[in-house]
Length: 452
Ligand code: NDP
Image (cartoon, helix red, strand yellow):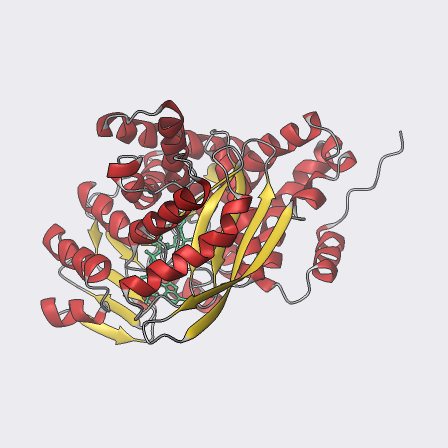
């Protein structure tokens, strides 16, 4: 058999750009993976024979649809909904739904691609997908959100199933939205199945699903530090975001003795020199989850600094947890963080660091955990929610806490296994480790299943 030549990174990216014009986020995500994986493919030519990377970078299916709904004034509103089913080699499609005005095909393709690797790293049988709509949920009433979710699900339901595709929450989609979408799925299909995760505890949800992503990111940080006999104890932590992931990252940082001092939202960030305590965090949870207010209110309540239209990366600290959104750490931010003493970054959000920022962190040899590894705790517990739904039981919280801790440790160890750097016994390239670790599992399953 004649073997195809393994492309150089440049050749691969040129083809990718040609096939995906106007999709910068998707190209960024695939490029980062290709960098580490092409090296591995060169040493294992069967992956090139089967064109695995090329196939992974072409989603199985891109679904786009119109979402019409009535606002409270009776006006008809029109949005665009999507579901990207990237790959189901190791299990049914699984990945969140995002409601945010920045949602487009490029953003969701990048997220679905990342999700494929992330899900593989958890060790659970889940393929990769992502979905959402370009809806801005800010200022919408509960009734408007309900009508939107119902309309969204009226089209999406035909592409879902407990053994086909199981969405979860993401930015702008929490327990309220999952509840409305579950209700509509049940009404249309007359089936009571675990077709969504992140459900309320009264109707099939799992203990600690809400906490899992933020907790998991902090566990990953703990494992990176433990490897070099360090801990979070007494260390200043810079956190961005103030939603689900950020809130629970702060909660776990506090439990492990760290000192979180920042939080942000799309209007700016707060810097609390005294530290964000458990009581102050309770205020943030109420503000964001119940009152749906702005983080600026924290500054008024506790006398902290508020910096409008800025991100928290100028604040000195040792450990960073970006937990808001993609590309929130630019190259300039990374330089500032390094000169301010940041020694480790664990990404709670998906791709919060630009490619240039990642390169700077790697060049400086700080510990850097990419989102697909560090934030995999959420989807891991979603996978466990699926198992509980199939068996129609609910496990005890303590058991799930233990499973989450073990899974994060296994992900760390898998990254370490594939992330070694020749001649540098003390340095782990967690980016390469996560990319190659996730790739190998999906690739071997794809080869076993033939050219499909
Ligand atoms: P939430 O909607 O609960 O919170 C998102 C936070 O990020 C809010 O504080 C929001 O501020 C801020 N934010 C969103 N977009 C922007 C923007 N363009 N610029 C500045 N700030 C922004 O979402 P999650 O906490 O669930 O998700 C946060 C990140 O974590 C995302 O990248 C998501 O993909 C990732 N993630 C989430 C998982 C989960 O289980 N929820 C699992 C794995 C990854 P504002 O309210 O002002 O918009």
